[in-house]
Image (cartoon, rainbow, N blue to C red; front, side, top):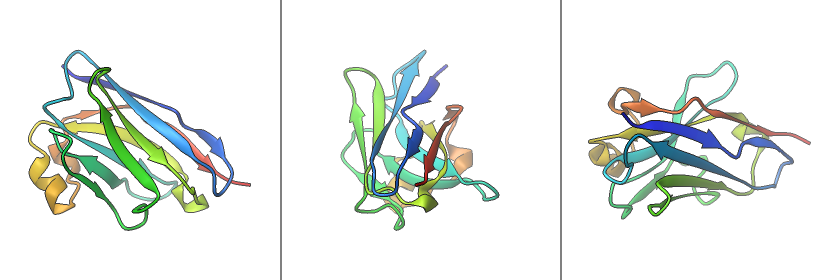
Length: 129
């Protein structure tokens, strides 16, 4: 069973950058759609970005488009989220998730949580001066 562990969160000032990483064990993430979600205090969890199983397509929600970059490291069985020009509203717990048959949703720019079978425990990102 695929296990996911996020890392790279922390405290950063507005305008700063962080790179989140998601490491997989117990299997390969290469055949899965990978997604990053986040949950801000008092808000529902939301999808942020996804990458298709072959890495050929990425999607970003409008609020992060142009600032975040998702990419795979297939050699090390990882996926990363490079976050630039961070804003206070990016403050949230960020989760990595894998979907065995999620490419359709990623192409559509939707993030149905029920279709992501595997989840990490999250990493906290705080953007504050």
